[in-house]
Amino acid sequence: MDRRRYARRGDEPGTDRGAAAVEFALVGTLLVLLVFGILQYGLYFNDSLNAHQGVRETARMAVVTKAPSACRTTTGWSTVTCTAETMIGTAPADTYVNVSAPDGWSRGNALRVCVLVRSRSDFGMLPLPNDGYVRASLQMSIEQDATKPTGTGSAETAPSGQSWSWCG
Image (spheres, rainbow, N blue to C red):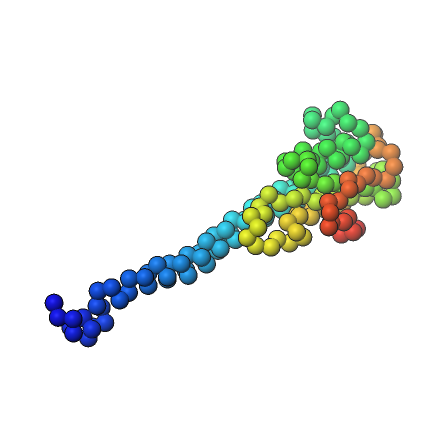
């Protein structure tokens, strides 16, 4: 074939050999980041929903002095802490609990349950809020005086770089 005919049309064989690979590399990188970002934040929000639901269930069970069967061997504030770890459903090492009744355990007083949960979605691709820790808290009125814990509450030591100051 005549090379001049290809040159006029701009489709001479071999002139665009690497263009598709370069375009795929540019678009593919962005696409992979987008997909992993969606996965990472989806898992983070799932952990957030689990933490909030677990705190709600824990507070509800605590104010009516009930505990799941796995926590019935503990007493006082340890029962509430165990309940939170059980209701949230992550490894206890990844769950930090702060429970308190600032005005004492008495019917009508407030019970506050706060948790920090390390999200399992940290792929390291994108930054997560609070260094990947989900925060959840709830305050509920105490309904039963029956088996009240002694003291005003208990708090597990917050992980490095975190504090309980947000759990007001």
